[in-house]
Length: 187
Length: 148
Image 1 (cartoon, one colour):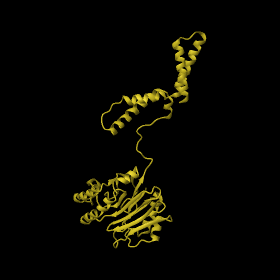
Image 2 (spheres, each protein chain N blue to C red):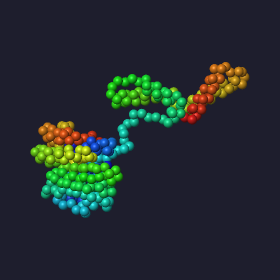
Image 3 (cartoon, rainbow over the protein chains, first blue to last red):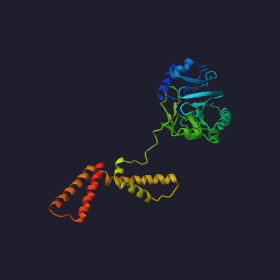
Image 4 (tube, one colour):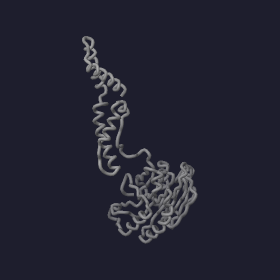
């Protein structure tokens, strides 16, 4: 199972799509999760510019004006998706890995910056994650939150303990595994 | 700089796809880094122990390993004991390797020299029992080394 997650900061520019296209052909993920498409409409042509000619399926959440927007694309030769669902800041796909028939569920998340809105998002996500804990579940994306002060560095970033506490509670309450990151410390 | 993007996984995911690795890629046009989640089947970290196939050709090897392994007494939880024992085993094997399978050609030459020395002695006089025993042992060792 191979996934890719990328906050692309807008797919409108052709150069961004070329970049994603390169990443996809290089890494060949089964599923690609994009945050901040900043596009209100995604069509087959747009997906083709990201994924190429290979067979794929996709689901998306339109941006609100120029902010947000989620896109999830999957390789239909590797996975079968039978359910997609979208709500504020989250795009869900549910399906099966073709080769092993293993069920999976993937949450593509673009969390808001505002603390209250984040709290609402964790509250909304929690029961959904909890009720799917017995399947192969992945919550990925841009969480706009960090767990510990060490995950933020620099003059322009502020660490808020209260935000981190809520984020950690969401992770711990739902028994989610936070993998170590390879290659660099910041994303 | 912050670590805002990540993958969270359920226990079932980790159990199904062992050795899942979260990787990062070069920052491109976005101010975020693309992340990948993939299963690295080949990468199990550094090897705790290594074995050369030729060691098994020495008849004494198996006993050596069994006895050495049994002679370690470590206290603690299982994982710790295993790690410590493997580490000590590595040192013992290194020593054993030095005496047994290192410099095979040199050892073979030494044995051959000793054999021809005893052979010559046998031509001119009768060999003692212990010399005959030594000859047998040398010839056995020669065969073992030649196979290794």
